[in-house]
Image (cartoon, rainbow, N blue to C red):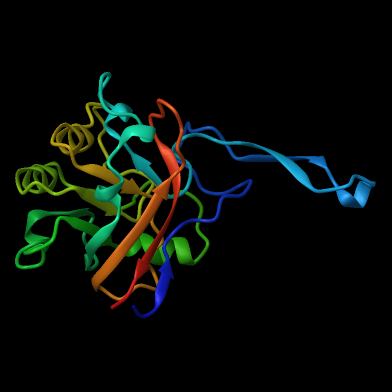
Length: 210
């Protein structure tokens, strides 16, 4: 394999998070500088912090939780697809001829450049159009990822994109950092925290270039 790209967000206090989600706090409990024998911190954050996986349990009451999802869906060949400006959503027109032969796709939008510039949360992020979710679900995709804290924007709070993908068995990977990644073919390695009955889980995700 060639170059390794870390596409995960750093987890730290003050980091961008989806509005209403719990903030990140890091409280030192033991510190060598205070005379303790070792360093130890207490962490507090939401299940959808930074780069994270949405399992079916996130929106489906009886859906599989984070600790029971198929790890094979999160690991294997994938394609990074660039969605050019000035698109405000990933439409089916952006996909023509780009998804043949793959079952995992990561969408690189202008969100990535904005994260790289150090912006906080921005409400005008690029998300997936509902018809695109329907297309990917019908095509039996196993994983769809995007470089925004949420894969959709829905003022009605009905969340059709999440429901369409998760009900089809397709996992969702959000909060990616793809600014340094050229579009193309990769091997995805993604392992979420094994949170029992978790509705979501932060993860470390990397891409291995051929």
